[in-house]
Image 1 (spheres, rainbow, N blue to C red):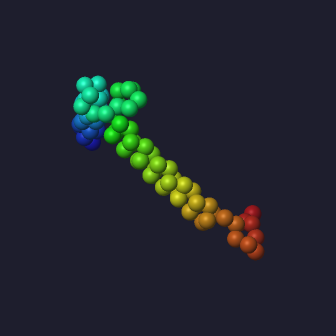
Image 2 (spheres, helix red, strand yellow):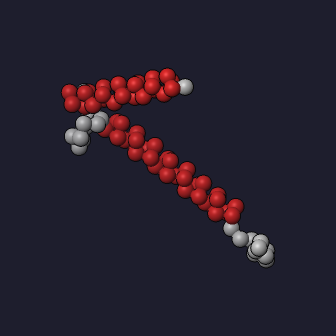
Image 3 (cartoon, rainbow, N blue to C red):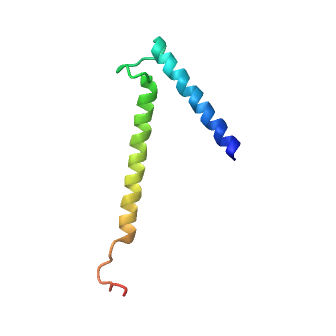
Length: 76
């Protein structure tokens, strides 16, 4: 299990270094010159929005399930 984690982290690190180098060389667009390619920033924003939507959906479902029903007495 540890080996799988090390391999996954290594692959992500290599991909990150590759995209930073590609952005610095001008192979990938970088609007704000922060060293990260725009395509990665845009995809990260999409994923972040999707996660926020799912978290909000779960919060709403939790509120619906745990709300106090009218006419029920509280448990003591």
